[in-house]
Length: 213
Image (cartoon, rainbow, N blue to C red; front, side, top):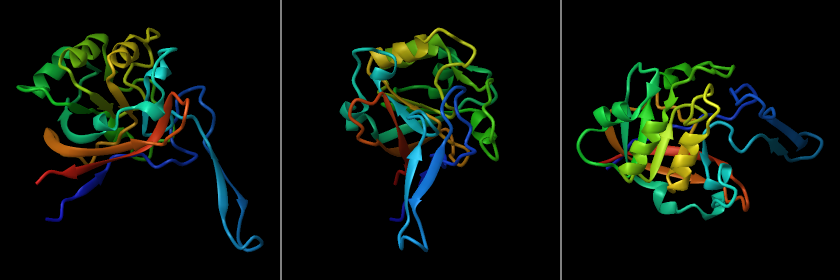
């Protein structure tokens, strides 16, 4: 059976919106045609650019780095929900949309996904999780949560509680998704792996959904 794959990753380009204060995205060819007979390039950007995974080390000084994340959390069945036009993703919102049962992995589609089309500037008013949503996720035993902007946490909230609650409880955080082409509510298989960067607190990744038979 030919099962459809949906790429939910953002393309990395110099114009991709990035978190305020992050370095610019730069790709430069240090060898190129025709003089060198080959093209080879260097790439420079924050590890939290575009679609990426946060490891516990991102907020916990003694946390696990990206190399030691458990692959089992990154591959497998995932529930995708669409929370509509809410301004914040609360525990109550998650409870309502997830319904009965508890998924191992959860992706949350919001208005953020539609806004990625053509976007070149950071949107400080993106929809994000609240502290009680993080507590709800931990309480349900969810192993991975994915969101469709650059952070699980509001830009306007200086308290890192959302990140800390999730990471202290070994919930993998997947950020910067584009779920605009994804049907929700729906069950898929998630395929998502970071680069193996020793000592890193995060990594870009390629995230793909596969239709379940």
